Image (cartoon, rainbow, N blue to C red; front, side):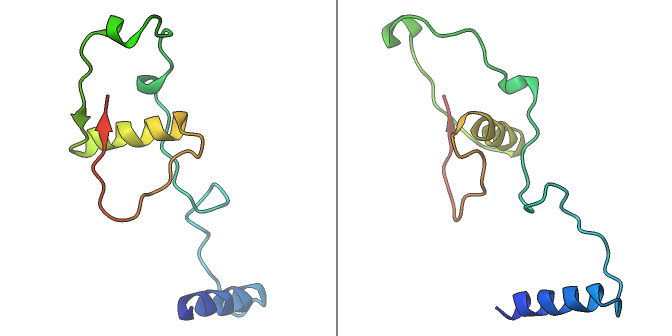
Length: 95
């Protein structure tokens, strides 16, 4: 709460011309970081048939920054809420 009060006070001083604040670092309006979408997560050909037709499915645990970026991008592209940082520890998988 104190940090919010301090920010409000600084913004008022800036608007009154008493201090100069640097420009905002966030450019998308809401301060939310969004994963950049790459061709790696573009939609592929539709899957036709039953689950048995696909053969064995493999769960890959997301480990390391490369897998994590891919997971975040997939969530951003295909989850109805998009990507948001998850609180706490998680175990994430790719199928």
